[in-house]
Amino acid sequence: MRQAPATLPGRRYQGRSGRPLDFSALGFGSAPLGNLYRPIPNRQALDTLEAAWAGGVRYFDTAPLYGYGLAEVRVGSFLRERPRGDFLLSTKVGRILRRTDAQHRDGIGKFFDVPSREVVYDYSYDGVLRCFETSFERLGLDRVDISLCHDIDIFTHGSAEASARRTREFLDGGLRALSELRSQGVVDAIGIGVNEWQVCETVARNSDVDLFLLAGRYTLLEQEALDSFLPLCQSRGMGVVIGGPFNSGVLASGAKPDACFNYAPAPEPVLRRVREIERVCQAHGVALRDAALQFPLMHPAVVSVIPGAITTEEVRGNVASMAAPIPDALWQDLRREGLLRADAPIAPVQDAARTD
Image 1 (tube, rainbow, N blue to C red):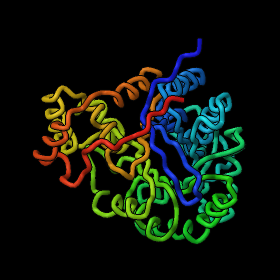
Image 2 (image 1 turned 90 degrees about the horizontal axis):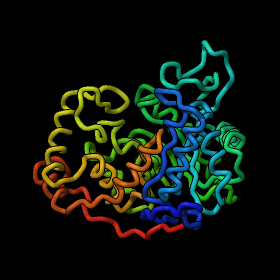
Image 3 (image 1 turned 30 degrees about the vertical axis):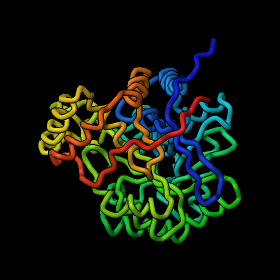
């Protein structure tokens, strides 16, 4: 007998195309399925996706970068067996994968047992279209719902100047390609996926994109995006997907000596702040990871939060975290102790439950 999916809250977003997108508030980030930091068997990857689906997850994000095509292949092979109208899929553009030998491939020491590929960054009109088409081949699907320009930030390109050049390349070229795909109905929504809110704001002020996938920059640890970016999204009707809600792990593991923050060992000031947040959570009988996963969703511009997972247990834990009760007093106490910004929304957004 087919297992009925759990009920997860849902967020409906309607962008510039006029076509509504129904997000599950809990999505699935597929970077770990690209053998990020460790190789995982294909069967384990598919079981993890199955657990997400059984738990009610209906939004899946991937990218050519994740395993240099491996994650797109795995996500696509899983979703091909599901009714196409029952899920949302986003992938990304800006990296063209070129075959090379194993000794010179990109991602050595970060991605394991992946195809030997080198990355060519190309945010031009032609480059974006080429990247989009090759993603279709790996996914094996006829439609992608959301296309996002990937990593035009300082984190990826090394300096503010390099990021500015890549952003201009996208605004002058790749954006036109994505806009045409949207107007033709090939995709329903377009945007960017990056690690910094500042470049999101630049694109928001200079384009009519729909969505931003912002990784790690609106969490229990960081709320600087409230300065101007998130209010701008609200005023312009732009949606935000929050990736990296655990800040690479420390908000899930807690302040352990080996905890990670921003893809590196967590520094002592971060560990100290996490300990303080943990203390308040414990006083209210709330798990840190539950608070971390639910917090971003209280902002009205946020349509989904997408932690990664590589096991069925991790997925089920994320689904359980979404359902965990959290008293209003927890958020109030975090505010009072200066551990949460005073302007951070702390009232749950009314969602429409997903039951499909």
